[in-house]
Each structure stands twice: as structure tokens, then as C-alpha cells.
Image (cartoon, rainbow, N blue to C red; front, side):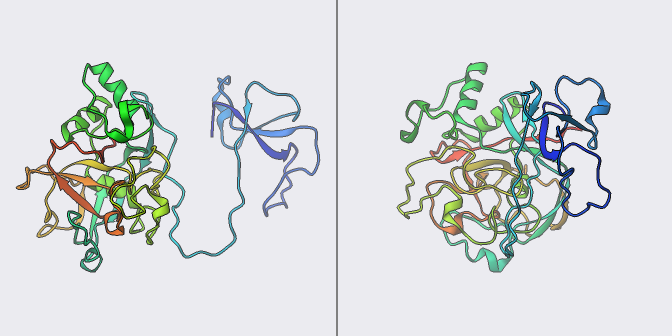
Length: 337
């Protein structure tokens, strides 16, 4: 919104009408259109103030001019919990080009109550109860799970070997699809190389559900069209989908339900929150070696079909050395200060 390119606005350039306060559209006529935002060629910081505007005749094609698009908001009343404006600031990790969602510091309610978890009937999908308030420091999370192309570049740079490719991505030809068949240790090694770590399951759930307590990333009602899963209930959706297409959360992260399970930093403990002070925990992460010797996985995958698999509070644990066709990961970075 400042810098890079000046952006065309619909208004004619002219003096503001102080009485025009309801959806003002500027002057009725003119010879020049408004431009906003400054551009890459400007060195004077005064030009980057939000209130500063420039002008240009609409016909010439300026070398510093571009635009964005606005849509009229729907006037239809709805009671569904649609995602609010994403908490995304356009940040990119220069290490691998991954787009980052900015998650601000604050509290959210994690987990589900006992009535809700009775719906988690699928074998292996475990509860996260009771509901508890968690305080998190600000952080960045990869908007998408790590892709084949990103992981391939990492292996080349670090002299590591790619895992064997699954049948649905023979030869790892689909570069924009999730990398799978990586162990927990391999996923964490990539995260460290990228300058971060695997997300704690608290960080993962905050990015998946936001702060309004929704059941699924998009709201409270299951909708198989919003995620990549086995819609025909055959147990096989054919494999993974391209990242950035499904399962969006309020934070602008994709595949927070479906496509691939995602490794988290925590050791898995089914009763981690039982018997603990469950209100106001700050940046919680379970680093205690669990009896099951399993790490937390979140999000569900393409292989599953029941809605019990995909709630934001759903979790699973599995051995960290396991390689699965539906296990992937994303990276968390500490907020820049």
C-alpha cells in the first residue's frame, strides 16, 4: 500500500468536497485520474504517507502505474462464520520463497469441550480437551504446506536425498504439490534450514481457527467442497492436490483441513491438558518424550472422508520416523521485531 507501484483509483483528481461524506467519489469531471501509494522510483518518504495522492492523465501508460480491484460487499444478511479479513501482510521467506501469514500475539480458545469431542468417532483421531485459553506470541506461519519444488531445492542445496515418490506424483513431477513421505526429523531439519521450526500444535490451531472458536477453518458446518478429501468415501481421493486451493483459514493459510496431515513440534500426549492449569498458558508446547513416542499431526488428509477427521481441534499422533503418502508439514517463524 506504499511503494512498488502507484495505483490507479476511479476518482477524477480535484479538490475534496467537505460535504461529500457518504461513499465519496471525488470530482464529477476532470482531466487527470488519482494515483495512490507511491512507487519504487521515489526516494522522499513524504510521498509514502497514506493521505498523499498523485495524478496523471488516464491515457498515457506510465512506467510506474498499476492497479488493484475492489468488489461491492454483499448486502445479503448471513449467519455463517465466513473468514474475516486475512491477517496477512504480504511477507515472504527469502530462503525458499514461501508466502507467510502474520499471526498477531494474543489469546484464543484451544480445543473442544466433552460434548463436541464425542463426534470424533474415527479410529485414530483423538480429542483435544478440555477447552482452554492459550496466549501466543506473534509469529509467522507458511500459508501453504512445503511443496515438492521447495523441498527439492533444499535437498539440492544441502546435499540431501529426496524421499521416494508416491504413485500419484511419479518422479516428483508436480512441483507445486505437497512434499510427502518425509519423517518428523526431516521436516524439522527443513524448518531449521528455512530459519524457523515446526509449529507447535497451539500455533497450528490458532492459525486454523482464528479467535472465534469455529469448528472448521471456514466455519461451523462441514463442507467437503472446501477441502481436498475423499469425497466418494472410498478411502482414496487419488492423492494430494496442488497447494493453495483448499482448506483456507481466517489467517489466509490453505490446507488447514485436508490434503496432508502436518507434523507439529509437540510430542503427542492424549491427556496433555488434563490435570493442568488450562487457562492462560503462554506459548505452550509439549517437549516431554511421550509414552507413545509419537509426534503430533494436525489437519487430516486426502485419504479421509468423515467430517470427524477435519475439525480444527482434531489431532493425531504417530511415530516420528514414519513416512506416509499423506504426511507433510509447514514452517513457523518467530515474528520479526
